[in-house]
Image (tube, rainbow, N blue to C red; front, side, top):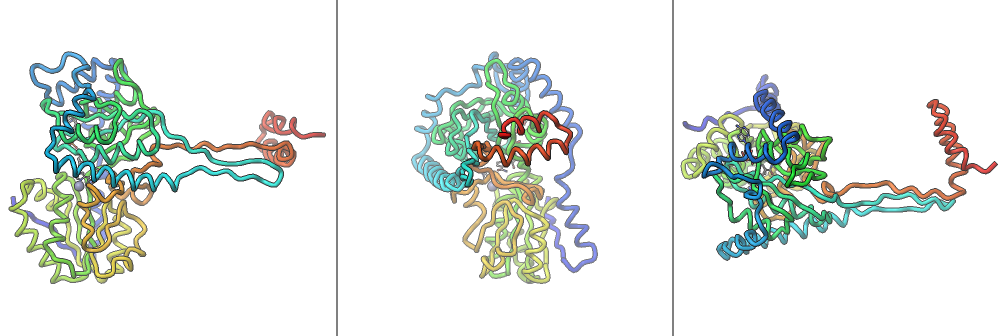
Length: 439
Ligand SMILES: NC(=O)c1ccc[n+]([C@@H]2O[C@H](COP(=O)([O-])OP(=O)(O)OC[C@H]3O[C@@H](n4cnc5c(N)ncnc54)[C@H](O)[C@@H]3O)[C@@H](O)[C@H]2O)c1
Ligand SMILES: N[C@H](CO)Cc1c[nH]c[nH+]1
Ligand SMILES: [Zn+2]
């Protein structure tokens, strides 16, 4: 199948409609997936380990007739350490470098998230205390591809936040464990690794089973089954976000090597047939050159079939009036990843309000951010960057308000509170405040 990437012009009368249709694609929910996930979760809630065992044997095609007990899915620390030791030196070093950079970035982030207190003139002290979550579950996808980088991106901010127990789940299709994923878990200091995935893993972490403890929050990306399960268990546990198929939006002024831009579009398209890759550029000749690069480079890609489907279904090369209009469209798209590949990226970045992560200048390829720049690669997708943020230390913390009212403070605040409480018809609230007022 040849790639059929659509070319759009922002001056066309149906442009907005066409763009909306392209972006809305992901918003569709699949009834079959929803009902399958509802059944799996109910089953895990009621039958615990027995259900998790059955679903894992079935969906992950565990060989030799399947595992006979949940113990088969627990990975011991010695196996994690052995995986780390078994890697080629260059891979081990790259994982360590990435982990260190991710840790440094998130340590800096933590420094910005401290609690505070202040004292009022009557001695009343008000403040906010920040505490880590006790136990979190991190979902590492593993169905179609293994993601060691996602182990680091999920586990390190949890550790930096001070979470005591990090339970990682990762499916192992056909029972094959990815050594780099296990090595990353060893480097990141994950507490426990369980080789289960899909909705059954999300259910196990949310409700707890005989062998798996219920966690306080589940984070991490996954496929449509994982996303539907996370949506459904929210409330029983916290969740970070629903991170869907990857997206890249490139704003280019027409001065970057077109091969670079084509490959950047491929880099997210190769994740998933549903991934979204869009270029906005004011120069029609340049767009034609990027298109030529796409056709030239695509056959060299091992994952060319996935890229072809993704670019044909959810890709677009858009001729815009100017870079100002490109920025306005970028804000409407609110992409997971936004590259500003231009001579003066800071000028255009000032006009961007909505993007999961911004990559400024032609040397900031999105792929560097996926692995080792330091900021998190778990990011809001499907236009949710309008209201949510990258995974971060803050996702593994909670805040408690701290209120320490002085006797003097109780006199003045008591009158205000009582007045409002009577207004709401709540006598006990009013009396509770008034009892502390000296007559
Ligand atoms: N946003 C990010 O940071 C990020 C990072 C890495 C990957 N991703 C995305 O995560 C996703 C990973 O998906 P994946 O499939 O490779 O792995 P996955 O681990 O999310 O899903 C695999 C699991 O899906 C379940 N499943 C599969 N078919 C099923 C069926 N018919 N019925 C019930 N359950 C079924 C199985 O339990 C299996 O273990 C991709 O979309 C990828 O783009 C996102
Ligand atoms: N681009 C993905 C998030 O959308 C993260 C990732 C992992 N490995 C490579 N890329
Ligand atoms: Zn990626």
